[in-house]
Image 1 (cartoon, helix red, strand yellow):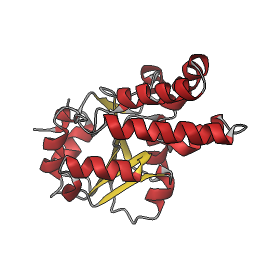
Image 2 (tube, rainbow, N blue to C red):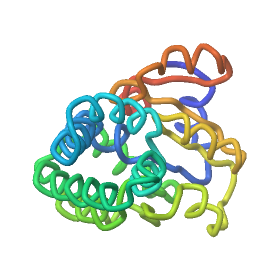
Image 3 (cartoon, rainbow, N blue to C red):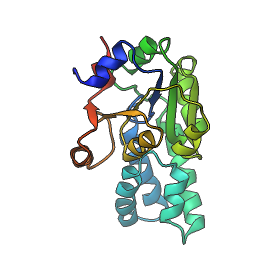
Amino acid sequence: MENKISKRIQYPFYKTLILDVDGVIFDSNKIKESNIHKAVKAIINLEVANEFTPYFINLSGIPRENKINSFFADQPDTARQILQYYNELNDQSLQNIKLTRNAESFIKTYYERFPIIALSGGALNEIKHLFDINNLTYYFKYIFGGPKTKEENIKGIKLEKPVLYIGDSIVDYEVSNKINADFLFMYGYTGLLNWKEFVKNNDQIEVIKNLQQLLK
């Protein structure tokens, strides 16, 4: 890929790098999709699970508490049970999670050139555990997660600009705009069901399949 962003990251042009976690660093979106479907099916039923799962996945990047509590606003006890069971399923299934293609090489190549920030909508304790067991924590200046939103987490940080933000969701794109960062949409592991339409409707967005494309 020889777009303007890939050239700028090589020189380097950027002063700060922000990486989404699910679908950019870890190949975790499909596992989490399966887990939320299992949780809602077990707590309520299959019909509601089929209805809620696309809603949950297409709002990737928003803390799980916000999505579950919003959708089941009139059923607070049910929402609490779903969240608890979903967290339990993630604890069980994410222990051997794989990284996306050459994510580790990418991180180790660039962490000395500029600070790298991990910005996730996933639960912070869950994210930190995954970073620890995969020996990645050392390479990041900050690791952020829920229940705070991505915007809430990043707005308290003084970012050295220009900033490159690599994400795989609409929320990532919206946050990148709010902090005036260049944005790369990584589609190879995204859970966004209509990502092609999203990119087409925002033709200024540059895309990559995986982080391998930014390595030379």
